[in-house]
Length: 399
Image (cartoon, rainbow, N blue to C red; front, side, top):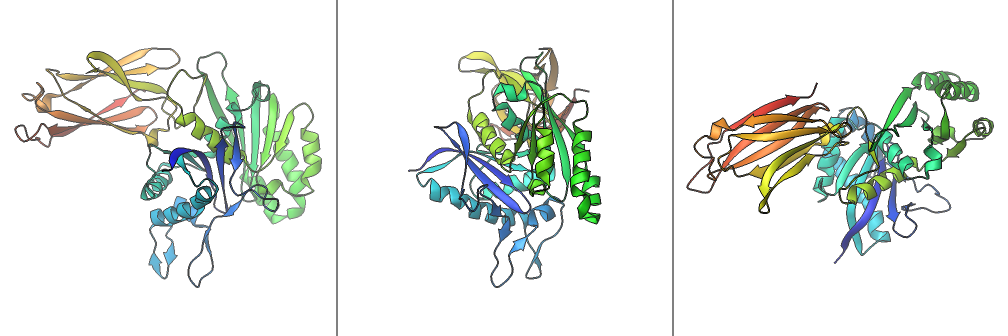
């Protein structure tokens, strides 16, 4: 039987896709499908249809909510992505025939809630559920990549210019070393207007990009700088790279995000414990959510939601059997200040059935990073104590 051992990073782009497996011997990501002719192991993001040209550009269309027509019919975006995932993941099966995926991290340019859900649904069709899969944006996988590097490379801030020929973004990693765990964040700047200028007059490319780069890093103390994306390819960029090397480490390549996704897969596969750093952004839950249960013959706190998880990816369920309880005690802990806030959720709808005569299913979702929606459902307790079908919700805001 195959074993769940592969830690896999997957960078899904609109034009190109990359896969990388974490090598347990070198402790580094290893690109899947790498050859001399294809050093960055790029796969065309395309689907071959019978007697037709390859279908391309579907990732952007799905992310924008646009329809995709095949033979005049609207195609299901979940099935399209599931088909492409299956096709590309076969490369890992060929290279590692006796192993299967332990943890998969898919990274995309923009991880919007709607797009992320479609990706999860597509992976679920392949039998890869949320227990083995995670979807992250490029900004987050950039942070995972950097935190896996030697500390000398991020002793100060770190910058990344991402230029794919259609858009130009600058990400700057910032680490607060005064707190434990160290919060790691990223600041983003959009320079797409510069790309439009270049598209109107390609001869200005070298000058425009040099100005943009120096605007982005002006007065910033950077330990290292990364240049990624197909837009930086060409002899014109050599002079710019030589200038940027002065006073900092400079790296150029196209495997940053897939490698970061691979490091994230390793991180997510490890058991929870005290972490040296915590990757955060505006979409991440900033607190630890927990409650107290009597389990394993003792009363203990159970963590339901960990900080650092994008709010739109949280969907946790627990089942409890009340034993005379009238309220559910929910605690929210600030991971940095250790301040604990307490919220009580009443169980009045099941009064009379609380002495081990019912099961309650409690679901935790988020409306945004600071607002949790707790849904409680009476599941009954066997045929003698049928469910009342009562469902009630409580919205908890930390603002």
